[in-house]
Every structure is written in structure tokens, then in C-alpha cells.
Image (cartoon, rainbow, N blue to C red):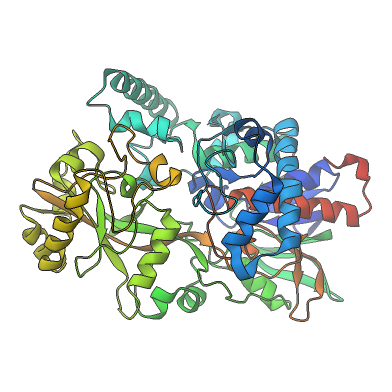
Length: 572
């Protein structure tokens, strides 16, 4: 790569938002360059579930033809409250379906429908199906020599590097492998294929979820001859007479400049690892608690810092400034650890969550964001924000707990390293974890009264379609509820993490970075988690990050192309 070169548009960041922007801009005729701070591309997207929330999209129309624009708007009003932005919501609803159709028609991107309900399907405007889609699995050999540059999936949610699809239908086979011959054969075939891939390529090649989303977008970028310069952190937005005209890049051992005729797009992944900013934005950190994010450690708020340096605004406005994710710390040995996001275990019958006082505090089968928000509120006034997931022996063997896998996988190593706590009695478990023993025993006793008949009068587990979606349909009458009965008992300590930030750079609907007075900074744009979320700090459904992020990237790219005077006939 030559130093100090010129292009039309610089996109900083290689997650879904940045790559969607780059692809759309290139299709409109712009000469685009993508910069990525890390040595691998894919950003937070590559670690995610790969789901997009796209109401009224082509797949959702087939699943739920009765869904309406009015219903979606009602739901988003309900969810975003005081932060409802009618213009941004209308732009999202107008362009989300167009974005999906464009990417499926013009690129390597393909989506499949999911059975996900909205996270609050019983609220006004909520639905039980039809708004969430998923990136289709992808064979990453299609990336050719760039296969090695794809960010691998999160280690803690793979099994010997094998990925699971973000669907209950796929995962249930792994939970039932010891009880069902069909599931055993399914799992065996998956394992044999994966072991062959490891032997040949040293990684799984048939990727799913967010890894598939990142890979398909990267394939589309590379097919268009858009360069992705990895290990190329952007250091500064270059300005001339109030206009963003390029970027100063800090490469390996050298710095150089890229100038951009039409502007710069910030897509740096928000600020989940910006220690100073999250210390103010996250209430549990502000009171001295712990936070552990599974997002890329390189997401240190570069976009927000660069925007602020040239007059952009990054205020902390939302009550919940990130997508909360309850996580646990997994010791690997030698001082290293992984972060396990509790995406599935909380929904399974027989697993409950308690605070240090031994009391339950929320419906454990609500969304991770809702459970996280409830945990933050429940621990207000305390230094530590934490809960313990608790289950009995039978539940442990059937579903596992956190990083601990179900039977027949061994548990001894995780007990010895302290990740998993085992107690012969509830009092024994409580004494080892620091939970109040009387509180825990009372909670389990009271919970079991209803649980034996499938009821949870305290918090209503299983009351919504979403609660039930990730539970166990074989457990009746309530797939989310079973008693905690015979010991030994097990517990995992869960603290707060996030899947990315919601607060961010203030922008116009089309992504222009705004100054404090509301005027736009010419040539500077923000997309993805760098931009303040249209969801206003709430989490209405599966994919409410990727869906808007790709849609607004699509919108921003078209705005830049229109402003450059490119032929509108090229518009997708």
C-alpha cells in the first residue's frame, strides 16, 4: 500500500455497519477504503449471534403477513419512550426491507428467517414472529487467502471451536444428544465434520451466526475490490475549513494519511472498552462494581474520541447506555480467562438466579438486557452487582450451567478452578458462594411450591412467547419452570457485561455527525455502535443492533453518493 493516497470515502471499522456502508457506497460508484484497527476483520459482528431485526422485511412478510407499519411504530414508541425519534424510525422502516433485498440481490449476503418473537411480544405492537432474520451459514473458504483474517468466534461459546447456529432447533440436538438417537446422530455428524475441518484448516470453515454475517459481508467487500486494511488504526480525522477530508492512520511502525473526496465514516464499534467513559456511563461501575465485556478489546471508543476532537457530541443520555449481558468469568489457567455470555441457560427449567441475599429478583427467562437491567437496579446501593445461577444435579446433567456443559461432559476441572461451585446441600452451596443460606433455602422452598406444577407466581417465568422460545418444549406444562430438588447443587457467579454500547455520537437521520448547535460537520458520518441507537437504550427484539446498523449504513452511503452527485439511477 502506498502512503498518502486518495479515495472517495474512508470507512473506519469492519463490522456489519461499516461493511454495509462500504458495499452500498461502492455500488453507487464511490471509491472506498476500509480501515480496521485489529489484525482481523469482522469486529463485534463476528462474535455476535448474527441476527437482524428488520420489521416488514421480505422474510417476515411471509412469516407474518398480518404485521403492519402501525404495529411496528406503536411497539417502537412503547419501547423507546422519551427517546422515540419519528424521523429515524420512519427511515428505518422505509429502508430496512430495501436493504435486505439489495444485499440478497447484489452481494454474497443471504438471510434465513428465524422463529424469534419480539422480546416483549405482549406489549402493544409486539409480535410472536416475523421481524428477526439470521445470516445464512457460510463456508469461509470462499474468502480465499483472506480466510485467516476473519475474526474467529467467541471461544467460550464454541465447543472445540465448533459453532452453534442461533436457533433453538440446532441447539436442542446438543442438549438431547444423550437422550435421543436422532439428536445423537445429528451431533455425531457435526463433530466428525468439524474434526475434519480442524485437521485440514485448523479452524471450523462452515461458520454460522455473527461469524457468517461478518464473513458474507467481507466476501462481498472483497468481491468489489474494496481494500480492507487491517492493523491500520485511525488516529485522527483530518479537517480543512470545517470539512472532514481524510484520516491519519497509525500503521505498524509508521504513519500515513489517506484523503477522501467525499468524507469519512466512523464505524469503530462504540466504546465498551473505553474505561473512562464507561466508568461514568455504567451505573454498576460508577458505584465500584465489576464489568466484563465479551466485545473486542480494541473497541476503546476511537470513533467517539475522534468525533469529539472535531466538534461532535457524545452525551450519556440513556438510562441503559449499553446492551446489558450477564456474563461469567471462565478461568483458562496461567492468569488468562474467557468471558461467557449467559444467552441460553437462564431460560432452562430448574435454573434460578439469586442475589447475595439468596432472593430471586426477576424473571430469569426475560431477555439478557432485561435481566441485566434488573440486576443493576436490584443491586443499587451495593458495591457488587452480581447474581448466582443455581440448579440441582438433574438440571445440571440435562442442560449444563454457563460454561459447564451437560452430561456426559466432566465438571471436575471447572469445580477445581472455582468457576463452578458444588454443594451437597443448599446451605453448603451458600457457604461456599457467600450467599445468605437462610435466604437461599427459603427462596428454593417457596419457588418449588409453584414449580412442581409449572407455575412461577413470583415472576411469571414462561408467560410470553419469548420466554418459552429458548426454554425446553419437552418440559410441560411450562417449558421454563421446573423445581430445584435433589442435591448436589451447583452455582455459577454472574456479573455484568455488554454486547455493545447504545449511547454514542449524535447524528442526523442520514448519519451526519452533529455539533452541539445541531449543525452537521461536513464530510463526517457515524454508523453502527458509534452512532446513538435508534432504540433509545432499550432492547425490543433479537437483532436490534445489526438490523438498524446495516440499514442506517445503507442510508448513509446513499446520502453520501447523492451528495456527490452520482447517478440516482444506481440507487438500489
